[in-house]
Amino acid sequence: MSSEPASMSSESASVTDWVAVVAGALGALMATLDISITNTALPQIQGAIGASGTEGTWIGTGYLVAEVIMIPLTAWFTRLFGLRTLLLVTTTAFVLFSMFCGLSDSLIGMIVGRVGQGFFGGALIPTAQVIVRTQLPPRQMPVGMSIFGVIVLIGPILGPVLGGYLAEEVTWRWCFFLNLPVGIALSILLLVGLPKQSPNLGLIAKADWLGIAGMTLAFSCLTVVLEEGQRDSWFESPIIVELSIASLLGFVILFVAQRTSADPVIKLSLLRNSAFASATTIALAVGAATYGATFILPQFLSSIAGYNPRQAGGIMALSAIPVFLLVPVLPRIVGRFDARIMVALGLLFFAASCFIDIGLSPDSAGGDFQISQLLRGVGQILAAMPLNQVSMAAIGRENAADGAGIYSMARNLGGSMGLALSGVVIDQRSAAHSDTIREALTANSIAGQARLAASGVSQGIDTATAKLRAISQLSSLIERNALVMTYSDCFWLMGVMILAMMPVVLLLRRPNQVADKATLQAAH
Image (cartoon, rainbow, N blue to C red; front, side, top):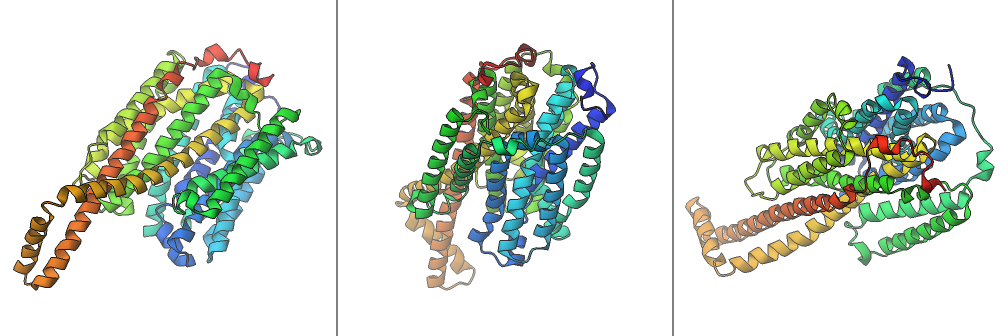
């Protein structure tokens, strides 16, 4: 097999190149699914391994911390081992750690397995972009980027749906065992689709170890702070304070390494390119809003509408419908229209979906989210696909691995920030709304309690018990309404955040405007 992709020397990719693209997409799907597949199965997992609610959060946090470390390291590992060897090793390790999770009966075992999954799965997402960028010719790249864009979008959506189904109908262990057949198929595709490359072990001696240490410290601690800060009352917790200081120290070390290393482990200089920096910034904001919405909507459907995981998953899956419908069309459109127009339209659709969900009430149910979910799906695919292509075209083939790592890391960090922001808003605004409602009810609360108590007495309950029940019911109604108002606040903030990205869109350029600028001032 030639070491040079067919796309480098012809106008059309070979069958082998397309096999490589499919392999990359399958690997990215496996990794993105496993980010959220445990969310709906978490109660069953916690019960089986004897973990409390607080301890169980580390099942997700451990994965994200390890993943955010590996993503920016992927470019260096690619140069060290070669793309095929790296993906074969990471796929095998990912599957082994998945089996370890599925067989675990303790919290420690589960966390170790999830950390291993996150670390090795972190390489599968950016390398999917690299394969598209290096294996396909410019004419066919929109198709490859469409495939990647769909995978990145539907992974977080289908994860909770699939996890909830497996946990209820089969067993939660199949959330992990499912990766075995997928991993075997992926390994076969990698062996067929990617050429064998010789490792460059000499890079170990020349590695930017200071940058690796700083990056690991900075991003791992930052992710833990974002994921666990809300549960630990943020800076009231000594651990959160210490982790924040450690993260800041890590960023200082990383900055020093960027200035002193001849070959930094993560090429932040690429962000000097306005098109790439703009695409990365928008990806961070879209990631925050996407993960925020996938966090808030299931909570509303569960706590307010009384939906079970499968019912909530059905509503969540609605946003995937426009993605599948638009995939065959978008590759033909991207090359003909200004990327800024498509991204702007996508952001407008996404923001509109958030603003529609502002008008929630305690009686809202799944049907009230159908239009917003469909609009959200349209907005996500319209924005994501041209963003993926613009970001990769802006940096050229030689920087594809480094750029993909930075881009994927920004999207994932945005997701963590979105979850953290949602937690803060829910905590603070629900208390504020509750106080406001209580103040407004003060004048009429006695009459309201009397009516509720009279209703209880009419059902044969004694007066004292009826009064206590009336107070409890009134308090429950207040908290319920406060929570609904808080969810509306969250959607409003997400909509505003998305609209704030509109000026940044102006800095983007069409892929064919940047494809010939592979030398990039940022690389210098």
